[in-house]
Length: 214
Ligand code: DC
Image (cartoon, rainbow, N blue to C red; front, side):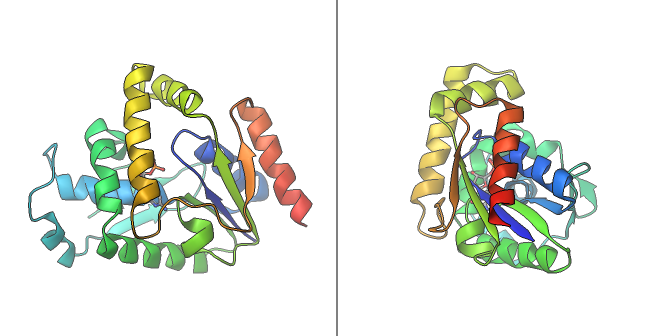
């Protein structure tokens, strides 16, 4: 069984996806982490991209992923970047990198390779139900109000909520309006609004969606 989970940042998509993978004994892939890892590689030690960063894409880096919800790790050229990809400089730049066609082709190919070598997977992102796994048996579109999402993200990052809200809404705007594979709900996806749900309630609701399908 393959499960596609899409939605904007801070919607609770990662929490729900990891819990589904653990509960149902499926592999887990955070595709946002892959776009973040490419961004971290392109940035190097800098806080902004070099002007000709697209040229760097001709050299494909070696990306290794452990697609396991309890021990998800991502390595770039043998270096573990699992923590680094959550930094503000990567967060600020990732939408630009994720809008690039060459990057998306490369990532989607890797995502499908990981899917085909697993016995079943929960994959989370923005275009999983629409592009990466259009045949997934279950598709969930997770949402939550912007204020709530900013509150959650700020808590995670120990930041001011208003700063987080600005950063989230600017990223939402870029991810939803880009030309290639924007954040989009698949026609056959089921909505899960977590605005008024606790973590436990969100997980329970996602499990119910999966169980109802079978
Ligand atoms: O889920 P996240 O916030 O870690 O994702 C990081 C960025 O990657 C986000 O700005 C959108 C982009 N992304 C994407 O374009 N397609 C995906 N399947 C997953 C993430």
